[in-house]
Length: 431
Image 1 (cartoon, rainbow, N blue to C red):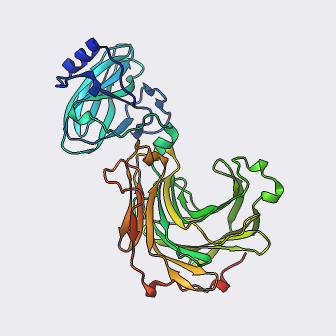
Image 2: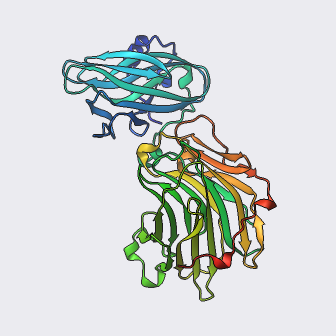
């Protein structure tokens, strides 16, 4: 835990300045702005956040927002570690909805009291920073929010002693599906719906995960969306160029308009994507086939039902060498892959899961298990959730909402034989 280092005299001055009724300095906690702060308003002409916090902030159009989660109600005393420029500046600090106008004239780092708020319940606290007046080139540099009082007691949740990149991205959440034992699973089918307003740039709504890769859809930019299908090489490396020939994933077929390439950084292998303008509140269908080729390799093939075009589209078919398996590890996940977007909530529904065995038998998949990643496990972010709504599994993450779901919670949906997909597997496109 990062705590502000203060002398007893400094502690006395700080406590007196904010009229805090605390008995010792041990309850004063420093929350670094780096990792816990986002630009929530303003044109991103430049970045005013670095590893030391907000620096050289000179644009009055910017609003910065920081979040931390408290576990207890009560009084919360708030100060800043900050310095200003030239003849000083005036900023507005809004803490949990309560505004404070703060004037600063200190050109060196100092503890600047903000004020007190009353916290009625455990949950996330949001602190906003806005520039009001500057008499020099910039408003201020701000490195830390300093909190004390009953609501500042541990446990607290914020980014500390954790890698900033992953913490700012926010927690990834997963729904693992229970497959029948003693069956060779050849096909997995899933339906994906992103609700209106949840198509946040930087989101990957992964529908059909499996042992060795994944298949889903992404929001990549304001103008581009993708259907992404990747298969990892059995050769473990993050450098695609180091994979020996006999371990390289081979492309067997490519769908219309599909880009084929390679990827690294998370293991290496073959990657394919189709640029496709999927829409919110529209359900899209994903179908994946995995089967051994009888020669010590496995074939992975992905199909996407383009609802807007009323047709199944082949994305790609890959051969993974030195692998002999059927469909294993069926799961879905939701992640944010742009750290600057980790303050925005996104949600996705996964419904009507089915599998087909190697004998051609269709079976519904009705049980899911919720899990999350290391960011959530470390307790630095608590904005993660999963469950069942309207007989569909859902996942939700990021945005600093208060509810969260326990690790390994099991969820069930109801099977509906009338919803069995009407797909002639033998007539799916092969190229």
